[in-house]
Image (cartoon, rainbow, N blue to C red; front, side, top):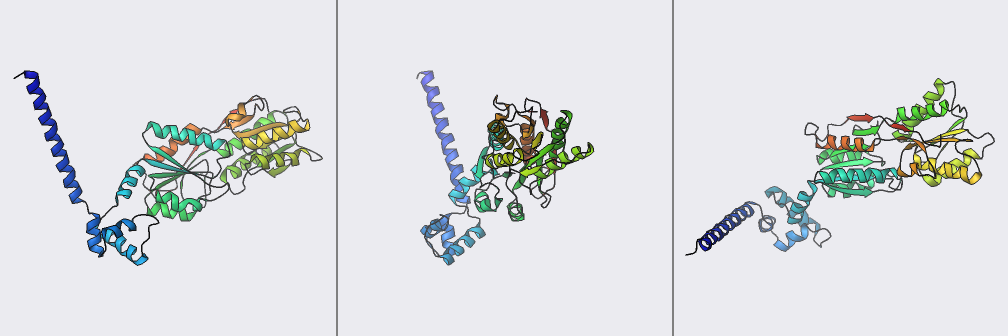
Length: 357
């Protein structure tokens, strides 16, 4: 017999034997796992009823479904759909954001997505209405069983926090801190950023310095305002004029119109984020007011549009990549367990000098 033919046959036999061994192993594993038939027997129902009990929206009497779910839990049955979902969720991180119209947050999403792809994990994004709290998405977020949740811009509640602890899901706030809830957080040093913004305007010789704030109950607004106000006070000044743009372009535009149409308008304005600063520059351009000669403008974030030739905005750059990496490190660190809340990591922003100031 040809030697090569003999070797080929031996190889085929080995492959077939390996296949049979694998099949037997899988069959044994399947036999060891509780089945829908066993659940049906324990609950005194049909296998079809068990299937309906684990199918969202399927017609089944409430008492019967409750009995089936109790039996399934008692014998440790996990539906095929849930097993698949658990495998997917094991490598999934959910991002909950309430302000994706602000260009800063798509930058965060992009950075986070790239970081997760490199580690073989997935990103699910829940976009909430602006200024909403995460209660609107709590049930949906928990139903997907993510390994962790990152929250940006949306307001976290104690209900969501408790639910995540019960499900052993880690939660990290990104770009803000909440003092009313013990939760892990990663943020830019907004207080120092506010000081840096005020300092550059003072160094330019401006003395009638205004402020356009964001959403009052957020740490980003409060800390940037506090740092800005403190550095002015150290120079013997107070805020010349102040209004709110709620971190939004349209509201920021109206806030800019209010300040620039005053009888004694500011000669410099610190805007609590870049999108409002761009709106202010558009107001100035519409009114024939020169930037920075008549009014100097400083923003916060360094979104991509800040560097466009139409704006050339001086701003405080948030260290997005470093913040994202730190948020992920809090999530993957085995020494930090779900419920080990209260860790806050703060990183300095960078003053980016451009033409607007």
